[in-house]
Length: 117
Image 1 (cartoon, helix red, strand yellow):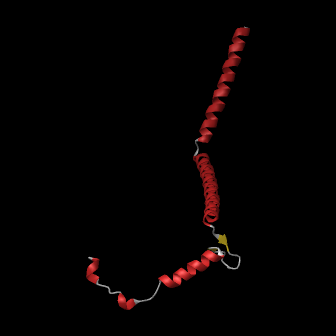
Image 2 (image 1 turned 120 degrees about the horizontal axis):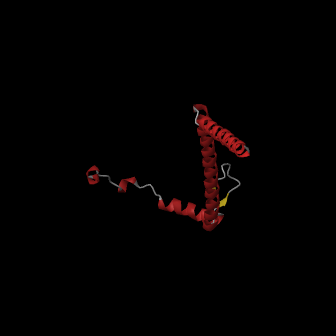
Image 3 (image 1 turned 90 degrees about the horizontal axis):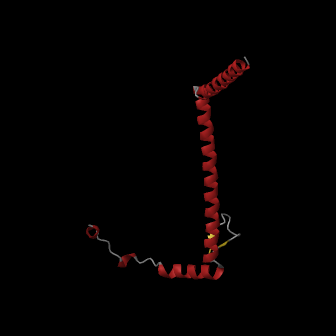
């Protein structure tokens, strides 16, 4: 008699467990649940993409600073847009070279359209 009661109770418990497990799986497969899971995954992917973009931006800024240091470029606080500029002596040499190399002598230059072909 105890043997039958034991197996009856074990069978009932297994049935309840299996029914609960199947019902949970069915609830996960409803359209509302699938839509919620997809929305959660999309939000998670968006957050990961945002973190990646911020990491790339930080890396770009760091690399730009390294290159500016290597090239001797500094920020000029007098300029309102904070454009990087060459240091004083190098900037003056660059301006002097700019004046000497770009002479406007259009009469010496002729342009022939047939040479383009």
